[in-house]
Amino acid sequence: MFRRSFFTALCLIGLTLAGKAGNADFLDRKIRVIGLRGQPMLEAVTQLRRAGVPVCFEEVEIDHITDRTVDPRSGDVRIRKTTFSISMKDANVREILNALVRSDSEYVWQADSRDQLIEILPGKIASSGVVLKSVLDWQVSFEQGLTGKRLDIIKDIEDQIGMKQHNVYLMWRGPWDFYNPVVTLQAQSGSARSVLNQLVSFEPKLCWTLAGFKGGRILSCVPCGTTWGAPPPTDRGSHPPE
Image (cartoon, rainbow, N blue to C red; front, side, top):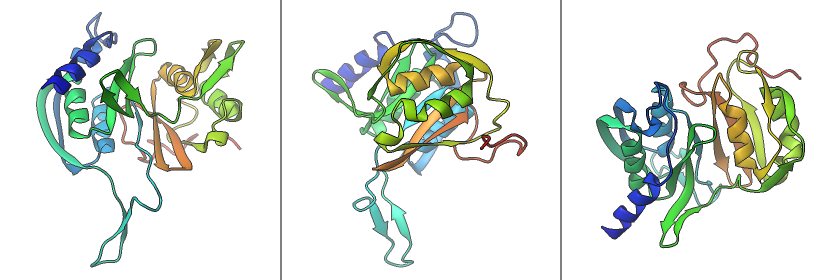
């Protein structure tokens, strides 16, 4: 009981976002239905994005040895992931997020009020507070702001913010030209994750997903409201220029 009360208190303190309508709290927005049957957290993220909720997601690191299983009947190789079932109707975003991280205790959630998005990240609840285990928390610094096309900036700063050195590799999903407006990245010092949050927050809004095996994580920036990994709505301009 104490653990749940403590968790709820942490999620409610200061975790507010501006909603789409007026000044309504984004986390109070009602979602008609969300349902999982023996599925991993990524499916819940996909459903929230389809409902228009801007969720960025970092999947718990998968070990390419210990997390591989072989089906004894078919011989197929499968990846071990925590799965769960949940069914909620007319619940608000906050209630859904709380239920999701209760169902899979390897994750926590938080709201980024500056960039108006939600993050579901590896972590745990400890007596000292929320402990994040994000691999995107290495520190970066930009003494001057950057102005240019958004996806070009992401592509250009891939080396500048040390993504490859941290075994994180960018893969784009979606129509390149449409989601590539001119933006200005503010001068800042912070985590690589905070830089990504700022870049995806510009309209039209994107969401990032970090998934894959330890030592070779794949970072995808996808249009919010679409299935992660789904084909782009059009092939025209869907790939970054060489």
